[in-house]
Length: 457
Length: 167
Image (cartoon, rainbow over all chains, first blue to last red):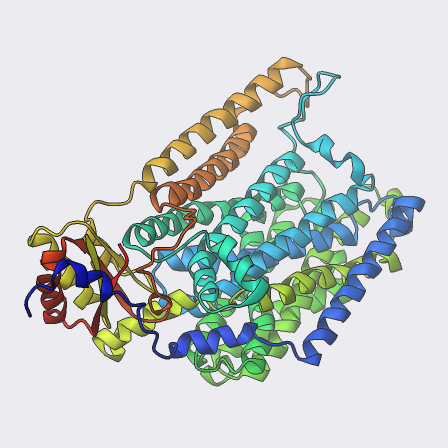
């Protein structure tokens, strides 16, 4: 071929032809297309509970925290239980997206986006409870170290302040992590969208083209964010546990609280990932992307963390007996056989006994069983926090100030509303952004194409 | 000047083409890839990304400002709490740690923006939605008399097709 004359080069310019789109793109973008009546029903249900909780909260602001059953001696009720529950849920997302990334566990690619989105929305849900619990929400800025006319500063020796910094850092880093991971996928959606969605994706994709410099910076950023999120996630639930462990309340004052809470958080979070991803996989026909292999791996994590939780339960009882401290011994005796015995046994059976079935491979890949088990674990983990917080507070040192706590209807309404709040965000996310990380799935697909099947996983 | 886009199926092919182009002196080139493949990125520029510098700066600034803030505030209006020293390093370490992570994370994302050239307000005319499907693109800017040579070189490296685009 001879070099073309100068004037014809311009004439030869034509747009790059576009062959049919790749299978991965079509399958995974299909999740975002169209909304069935079932979807609208779920969204309406979630919005109903969200508004119900908002209405109850307004009533609570009007009447005071008394309607939440806050009375001597239990001033930390269902709101704090639910706060710890949602913070815990959040943790599996970071574990999957950051820790498994650092370990190069490629199977995480199929579930990491869903888990990261879950993290962000769970942290946002948890954050609501800080405000709901303190009562005068409009004064919640008091917890921030801002210059004020009184010249006073916050107390950095208080675990509640550590909590503020830990949770707000965690929320920020989770949102950044989710967004950084989303950028290439938003660009995929941008190239294929029309109408207002095209505008939205054009803005959010920031002009991403997947050039070598962009991927290089992106890889580096994800690596560093993973490296930062890993100690962060361990610190966040440790700090949440220190809210309790730093006090002198019998049943709270133990040094195993930090690892115990972190293991429990990952345990409940993995269960929530299963609760969310199993229906999504079924409804949107993603069986080719989320396979038995993924369920097997997630089940192994659940089994491991369940055993750690069981170990923590046993060592709590052992230490209270071995310590010889009467208040500790009484607290743990009353946990198992006192007025809150139902919660304790629900916690023990759902969190440590039922997951033992996962020793069997057949059970690890039995999806309906996993779905039921994941819901049991969610319930069990909520009760774990209920047991820790309520039973300890209602039975402190002096028997003359012992009391009973019964959850009140406003608390249960706001608990239901927290699920509405979470599901509203999650359902909207599902239709706007890819719930499976498309670029990361392609990385595996292209490796497979280049090196045969063994490059996968 | 002209610009050519070679479209490749596999990352190794694109990387080989880039390496050959660079060895022939065509250094004004860019690749577009659907997913990160270090062989392709390193063929264009083997230097590691400078994002790590910003992460380090963020972390250091964070940990210093975390300690500075807590120590200064605790001593600006002194309140005795439980007989503990005003400057209590163990609890302040928790705050300093969280702020370190926060600053390092924010600066990492800033690094992605700076070194990844984001946001870009106009897409390259050589970019095609094919590169957000499963194909790899190698874009070369060259003099018009070199078009034929580059065209042949890209095809030698198994380019599925080669297109001329606006420069």
